[in-house]
Length: 175
View 1 (cartoon, helix red, strand yellow):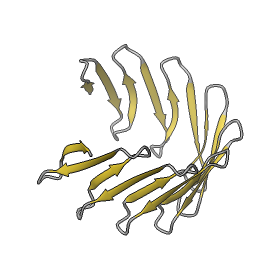
View 2: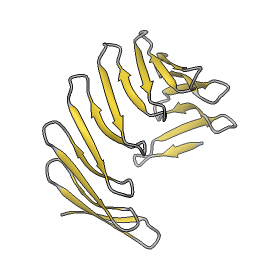
View 3: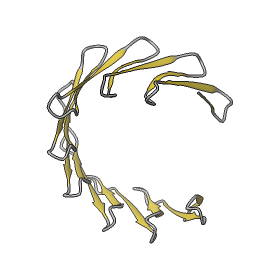
């Protein structure tokens, strides 16, 4: 299976019978390979230079527990009882933590330096605000069909969105 981008370059994709992607070849002939375990989970990804990342899963939960890169640097993952990632510890020891509400929506992310970003949702579960420690805020509103209606970035630039009868976004307009 292949894909032609806007520049006319072709990428090709190879899949297993179960639909798992095993090989990507870009327009320059560079390949990325993927291997999976019996449960269909990614276990190894090899880039065009032959560098491999290995993915390890918890035997108790089946969730990703760590990723080891080609240089043997390890990134570790922790989860809550709902299966949400609560912490990612990088190879350098830096730890990013995540908080969630009762619906499993991410409400806060704190980076290794202690910088916290918060996330707010409406009653339908749509993300309405993202606010970082500096007070920079991204705001979103939604229409009655839960489609993005307006988006205001941290610099105050606002965009409005319109949809056709098939719910296809037909207009993104800068306000």
